[in-house]
Image 1 (tube, rainbow, N blue to C red):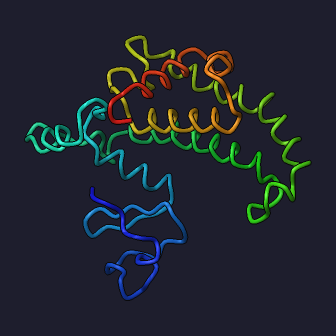
Image 2 (image 1 turned 135 degrees about the vertical axis):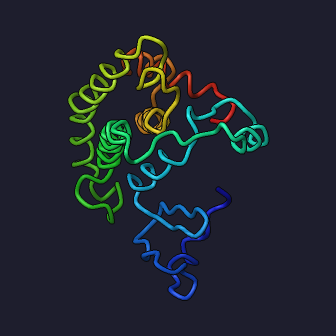
Length: 204
């Protein structure tokens, strides 16, 4: 899809492409003449514009060549109920992402961590002990329904939802400073397998 434009250039009304609303903040995706923002919105767009399954192993040049083949088809279409089932999981994964962020900024996103450290310690404790296990248990139950592999939907291969889950698990591991052994013990089995399988791929 090419390199994204700078945030400043997108916020200049004279540089905006006709009919695209001004983004409030990053992330911002520009694809052709279309400019969209908001993470869930971008992921919904990508779900209908990436070929199925997402190629995690080819080099960029090989992937570009294969995606131009006539048999390449969109992963999903907006008329397919699977797109909304997929997006339900994506929104839950983003809930985990937001709760992870809030452990460092439980009072105000504009205040430094040091200014709300006492509250952050309390929030992080509840997150580790209560919220995180609940999220991982939910993802584990969905992954267990696929008996053929480590992905969330049987027969679909790696999807946008799988890559979202990989990124959030990776971010949680970084935030909590988990060692490889701690990550294995904390994260439920198939969720860990998804993270491990994605992490070893050429394009990740």
